[in-house]
Length: 180
Ligand code: HEC
Ligand code: HEC
Ligand code: HEC
Image: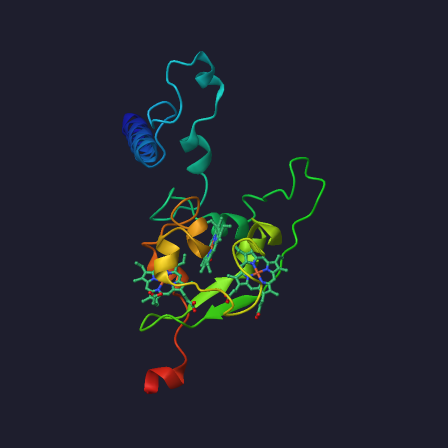
């Protein structure tokens, strides 16, 4: 009876550590250890003092593409709180204004969320070097984006990739347009 109990505990522990090991393996694939990713020098003795990406990133909500972290959800869940300045002595200026961009051919409209961007960037990151702050005042289309302009300054480089079509094209088209 008693030995059956211990066997049960042992089984739980073993399968628990098996699960933990397979998680660790999965995160190693998603967030390769420093020095194996072709950026850091594995010979540099200082490398052991750096935090491994998987240690920090595996705690954040995951996303199927890019660097496998859903940064907007991480902010929504208050898991990260980007600073407005290095010393944290300024505040982020958040605005909740969506711009619905409608020149999308047969694709759903693009909902540009100012709120999510303004939690992570300042207005001057985009206005006016990348976008004039006026609806439809910028020649944005997939060609210019793929060339690395407008949304393509960041998306596909430091923010989620351009293959995530419906994360940008997320707004259901005007019903009148659908009926036409
Ligand atoms: C990530 C880039 C980005 C950031 C950061 C950003 N904006 Fe914008 N903003 C846009 C885009 C894209 C548009 C739409 C332009 C278009 O339709 O051609 C826009 C449009 C606007 C407009 C015009 C809206 C309209 O209906 O005509 C205003 C006003 C504006 N932004 C203010 C701000 C302010 C204030 C901030 C900072 C709190 C800010 N923006 C931060 C990208 C950004
Ligand atoms: C980072 C955001 C983003 C992503 C990702 C994205 N688009 Fe777009 N797309 C836009 C914007 C912005 C426009 C221009 C809207 C406007 O000016 O009104 C646009 C326009 C378009 C248009 C209209 C014609 C053209 O060539 O501009 C099509 C079609 C289109 N996108 C298809 C796609 C497809 C297919 C994908 C995925 C492979 C995709 N888009 C991914 C933002 C995006
Ligand atoms: C200056 C850099 C920059 C520009 C320009 C930019 N974005 Fe972003 N965007 C970001 C960052 C950073 C995030 C958050 C990280 C991530 O999700 O990859 C983000 C997130 C988003 C999200 C995710 C919102 C969510 O709920 O998950 C959407 C949608 C989006 N951007 C659309 C656009 C569109 C459309 C444009 C062009 C009209 C654009 N962005 C231009 C940097 C930028």
